[in-house]
Image (tube, rainbow, N blue to C red):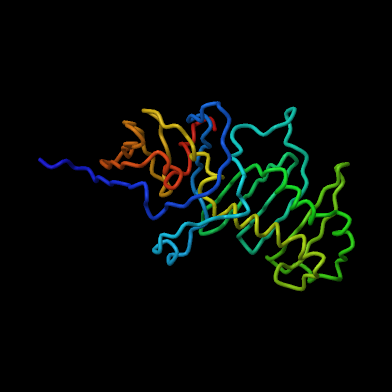
Length: 268
């Protein structure tokens, strides 16, 4: 009798074989406890154009070179690090937000995109953080007056908020497709580039990357199915779909291309 299971052999050089530069993690083991839960509707990344996927090209993101995963709690004395920048773009039911904190922590949230949501965290190296902070100046933003930009439209608006070391902030709301003077463009365009880079990334910002699989661990795939690890041999991981007679084999270094995170526990 044939086995009623769909066997998928996933090669190390699959069509999702993107390569990114990730800084070495600490010596502490990256086990399932450091993999983020995957709430319903979560996606790994903004989908790549179909043409690029068919061509199987490497997709480098220079903005993230040297960046590292933000694993575990990022609290400092029980609080988030001091905020430096908030930038939000709202287009009707789609909201994109990027927040930068001291020590290089960057948090990106996307909601309303094709019914899915995304929450990503990454830590930028000091030199990269300084390059973004050089352009993001509260004093320069204060020089841009409301009459210099197009007013926010109904259902469409952008907001940039820059914080001083004292905690005070300067902010400006405007229409993202309206008039944007150079003094403002010099500050928002780098943030838009970084937001795009993080939303496209599937490695540095996915806590499944560098995860060391163990038998019994469960992972949630990009299509919302839950898979349990049954065997790990050499670099190949055998996973069984929970509730379905399906089996896949994935190189452990490619797990981040297929899995969003771990299942959400009842108390998460």
